[in-house]
Amino acid sequence: MNSILETNFDFKGQVGTIYHGKVRDVYNILDRYLVMVVTDRISAFDNVLPQGIPHKGQVLNQISCALMDKTDDICPNWKIISPDPMVTIGYKADPFMVEMVIRGYLTGHAWREYKAGKRSICGVNMPDGMIENQKFETPIITPTTKAVKGHDEDISKEDIISHDLVSESDYAVLEDYTTKLFARGTEIADGMGLILVDTKYEFGLVDDKIVLIDEVHTPDSSRYFIKKGYEERQERGEKQRQLSKEFVREWLMDRGYQGEEGQKIPVMSEKFVNEVSERYIELYNKILNEKFEPHMMNETSAKERIFKNVSEFVNAL
Image 1 (cartoon, one colour):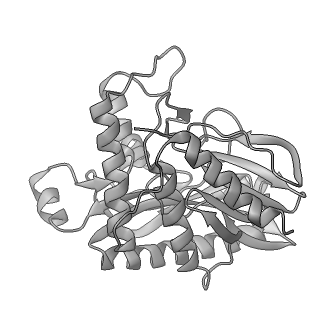
Image 2 (tube, one colour):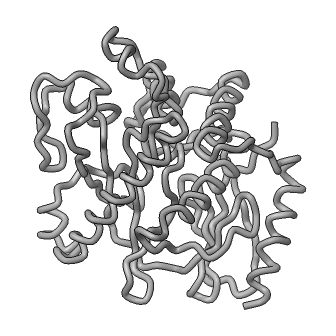
């Protein structure tokens, strides 16, 4: 199956070089707007895997756009328009160099830290006696640095403020937005038979106004459990059924890869690649309560479509 691993467009008004992130290719237009092409790349442990996941870019972009529209009453966001299934165009923001991670359940990185004996993460205390995938009494905010290269690192609220990464007053706004966005995401997920387990938000300034940037509540930035049977699986000590890329991380860890220096990224079989693609599509169907309609026919025609759709917008600026 075809997938888009990289783009190299030349749009009218394009400024500077293309930013190729872990998943997104970002184009600066007139130093005022950003064209964000969501590719089919997949990353884990802060490294991009060599194989793409068909339809992943479309899934991520369309989920994020739909949920930005469902949360803009809580927090303004950078989005202007989505002219293509794999593209969002929005305002260029000055990003805060932290990611606001919020966790409703003890799982993933937090569980690995807990299992290793730690009872504090990012300056937030966790009670003794918890088990994997157990719900926190109240969601906890565990920020990370936003690394340009390499790994994001856990950081406390106090260190963020003392190192002038975010002012105390702005951080209070980020915390408030993070809590409210997570509550709305939890409500939306619950209505679709899902549990929003944890997620991360990124924020920036547009004309001195704090806005949500990047993506929101996608399977790349968030973890979802299947709600039905959650309690029973917990009681039996079974793994939770989840819709996120955590199972990709687990697949890599089972093969001895955690992104450490010297470790070689395992090659995903075609069967596993298709399973990953199906998981992304399943979450799309559940979270948006509509059937996914793929727009990817082949790489060449998809890139031609993207260039045409984006150019119609930027040429009119």
